[in-house]
Image (cartoon, rainbow, N blue to C red):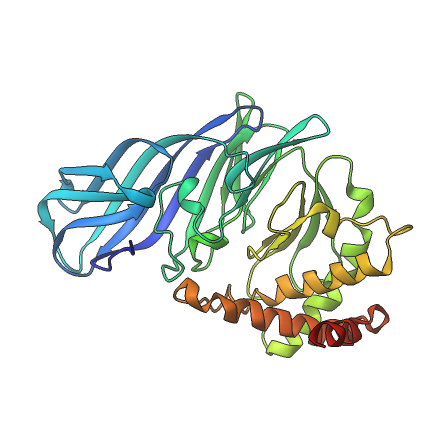
Length: 342
């Protein structure tokens, strides 16, 4: 069930037309491929997608091919002629899909009568959003091109590079990511609102659903000292261009360390500073430190396969307790952890 290494991805551009008011979306991907050894077969992931066209183009033009979807969304491509080693090809796939509603993959959620789109790709759900090499050892640059209704906010792991508006739609081209595994990509689209986080080494903001910016103050206060302490501990700057902390309603995982676009269940990230309990503040401090520690443990340095995921989580947990207790002694993090151990 693992992907082969005869043909490997080099980079991927993902074009999506997204409207939270709809139940479906369309898209296309262009994946640059490098042929390591001669073969007439390779596989990629595309689960529960309606694939409408698959084209492979090399230096000599289009390569005749056939494709079939197998188990677990594994798509097997067979070419009429062998692909040449040390040669580069471009694979273009057009597809359509329904938005998920289970808080997995690319999914749609409604709250207070408004619709939003969010993502959760760990561990193997990116393949349900778009075709890709959905294994953690394939770390490549990605670039998103999103078309969304004008008036909605759209964000990904990287800042916007270019924007155009025509016929009521905005086309946003985002900067390429550094090499990332597919499970760390993230999207958010909807009538979202932003609160700037001052004092970070990169541009940052707390992102909320409509009408919830008044609950962002505690996250805005905590983020700068947490990031500064992590940069000091690792002896290196935060490795990404921006930092968005996104409050997501009904977010099953609780929080996810997508670089540049960290997602939190909204009840964790967004607190009423006049009424939040010490336990709520402690939880936010711990989880924020844990997720931002992942920017180094897991994001910058990624396990080759899921059997080493415990290292990502153990290191992030350890550092969250260590730095959290130093940064926020009033929360009693060290005592709480000692109680848990005992």
